[in-house]
Image (cartoon, rainbow, N blue to C red; front, side, top):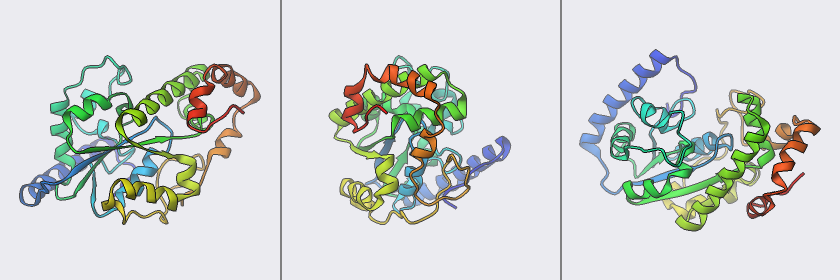
Length: 268
């Protein structure tokens, strides 16, 4: 099974231990020396789990974490190095050699593409490129109002903080696009024009030509549906913002119209 949604903490640890043992044996005999790395660079609440499931549908892909949010930062031991309170600090020191060795315990090295998607990676691309050879990046963004509403809904975040954070995420993504020849995928396009977005992904990496976009996926969504086909849920999220919330968001956005415009977004 490529994707398991929820496991208890003890079962989760047992699951990871089982996977690591199985992959250790397989990697010993069938390691592909020509594998490459693919990092999905995405702020939180932008559809990265959905995109990961789509890419992970390829027979040529191994994701280092196939349960929950599918993030390498949640793997055993790695979470103590990566999933910390200061994980969004650009000053955070990370032992990338150790992190890489942990991830390699969970990647199936017989696959030519090794996939990873932890959100804080968007601020660490320089370090990632230093420690991972033959690496490619996909930058994912989403309508800022929908992203902010998702943040508020799940974590009851201060709305000004949520708006400011997402502006910063977009600035990091712009840098990632301009410096590292990444491709840009927008959640809206992925859900409304999946064939076009699939072609962009395949142009970047031809080994992904078998990814499936006509499945029902298990990513978290506002409808709380266990399985959902590709559907743009932005307006359902945006409609839940009050006039007062929109005013608070726009107060920040009016100072940052350039970065919004760069990604094709505007103030509403």
